Image (cartoon, rainbow, N blue to C red):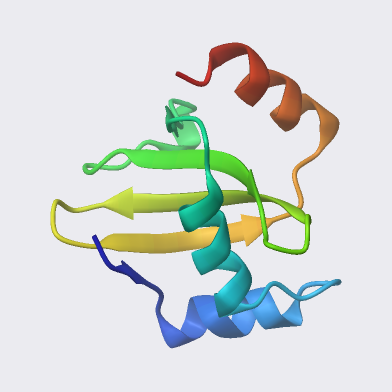
Length: 95
């Protein structure tokens, strides 16, 4: 399934410190070894569930990838280096 992002999201990722590139996002999708978790926090619930996972880029950079799967495309919402609590939660609950 293709991964897409809006220009606004692309600009937001490149403005991060350190920036997150398109290639790094695509690498994380390709390199993931565990499944997705659903973001069930009330402030983040969407009609199409918001999903996330943590994976490494080819260079070993750990990123949290947040996206929506509409059945035909994965729409990126954000990507960033996860904090310790996110890594712990993913390690405990990821299928």
